[in-house]
Each structure stands twice: as structure tokens, then as C-alpha cells.
Image 1 (tube, rainbow, N blue to C red):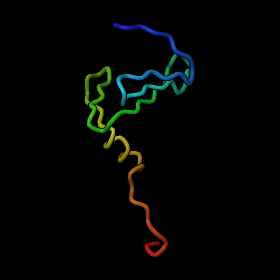
Image 2: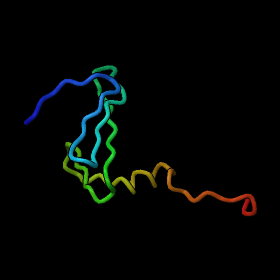
Image 3: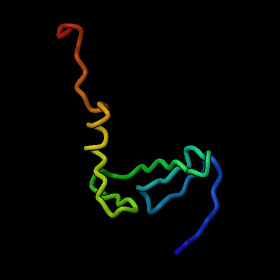
Image 4: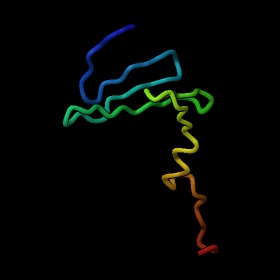
Length: 71
């Protein structure tokens, strides 16, 4: 296991296509942003698969945009 200390805004690269960024640190919690190809499975501590596509859909981030003729 590699153990490192990072500051707010620091990035860690895993290979050429995965980046982990420290987004926020407060109240004893660290928020991380993970950029990875969609085919990469990301596992949380609970060992439940976290699907980036489903996460975005649930937050309404992948809703189709309407053009001016459809409003």
C-alpha cells in the first residue's frame, strides 16, 4: 500500500488515464474527484460498484438539452 499526503487541489495520476484530485477538506472529511474512462469500475469502501453513468443520470446531469424549437 502506498500512503501519501496531499493538499487541497493536488492530483494523483494512476497510469495515463486516471486522475484523482483533492477537491475539499473540512470537518475531518476529504472530497475526491476521480476522472477515469467509463469502462473503469470504481469501488467504494462498501464494495458496492459505483457506476459513473448512473450517478450522473440520477443527478440530472445527462438529461438531453432542448433546442429553442422544442421549448
